[in-house]
Image (cartoon, rainbow, N blue to C red; front, side, top):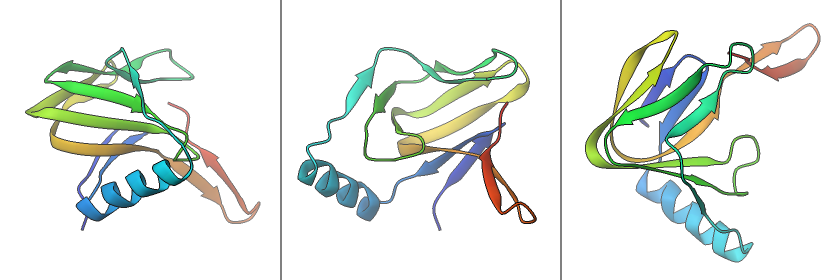
Amino acid sequence: MPLIIRQGDIIFKKLSDHERENMIIRMKRNNYDLEEIKSNIVAYGEATGHKHEFVSGQVSLFKTRYYLNNNTIIKIDSDYATLSHEQHLPVQIPHGIYKIVNERSYDPFAKKAEVVID
């Protein structure tokens, strides 16, 4: 079972060895590159302007076109990194490589899925 960590509407899914290898193979096949982001901010709240930001630990953020909905990959080199947000408790995220998954809501009557806005 994959490690999943959540802070508000942002969900971190730890990539298994198999998922990492599969991602690398597909990225190479489609000439997708990882672009390092020179920031510790994972996401901004659309409604409030607040931000999900790493405030401690050795963290690298990358963007790629590989994932369609949210293309952010997080690499944590330290034992843990602390994620902060003005409206949530800090979250400790352990060493590893993660992809970001935005929370979605589904209305079965309208048969419509939407990204949750923080």
